[in-house]
Image (cartoon, rainbow, N blue to C red; front, side):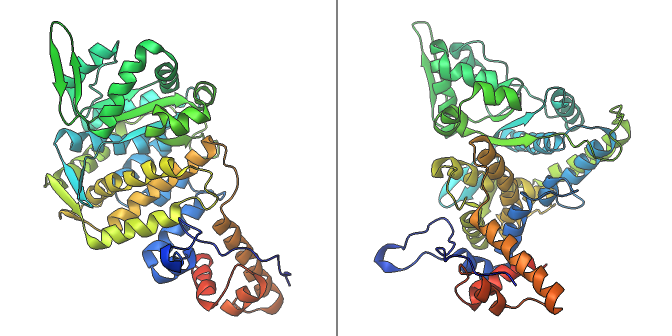
Length: 421
């Protein structure tokens, strides 16, 4: 039987220190053990880091949804990494809602459905092809002009506020903003757009102001170029930190992709019909996150926060609050017509954020496994040993006996709920 290991500190969520007044912060075990929504989200998070024959984005792809229709089409007809059409679809929906002035009320704030993301893939991965195909089918186009200067950017923002901007070679663009002095003003304007603050430019001849600015931005770039041009410091502390990241790698084992000819004609009508169905469900201009949605938000992100904290808190919070935007998108992707975003919507949104957390961790050099995953893997080893040697199911008592991090039966049951599906 496995031997005991040296005692470690109990695993906790977003904090490991006691709260004020001596009350300890809830442990991961407490949250997982008390909430089925939390267990589902953690299973999804841990599944991201395990080798599987399935595409990792399936955990964030509702069956029968527009996303599934898009992913299935690109899987069968192309060798394009599926993260590319997946993220493009979410950004096209974001842009549509942004153009319609849709907002979400959350914790006393108004949140617009704007997304800022960067997809990193190998050269020749079909980034442009995938986004062009989906723009054509949905009718939502990247209309924001390429900024030639800071002054021109403000002019374009005035006439193209709340539009979509898809930009290739994004790593080079980020590098230029960080290093070229004449673009510092453009960087400041973009930061103001990110925060939704007034953008204003005054010259001797004219004055331009843009109130409540917002853009949906999808950057595309080669992974190696990003690693070359964008430093870890810039990504964590600079303008690049305002974006969420998804790494899209080729899957050479995917069936039907040996000699793809990219013939999407047989899938265009299905994608278009699924898109129109989603758009028809967007019957409100204002949505709000309900009480159970707020609780699901707090639970999901206390669990998604990297236990080893190598992804800085500020960076993580930016990912976290995108969960509200994703919750709105999934509310519509699921065909739900009410104004309230609930735990189900937030749970799906958190799964996309889990992809961002995973890939952000890789980009900043975090290659370690969170303590929670290590614990679950160790528990699985103990479970399998008991099954093979004693022909019985594992019990909470077994985990308490062999894992010092398991303090009591409640902790043990929480871990067992994660490994016994």
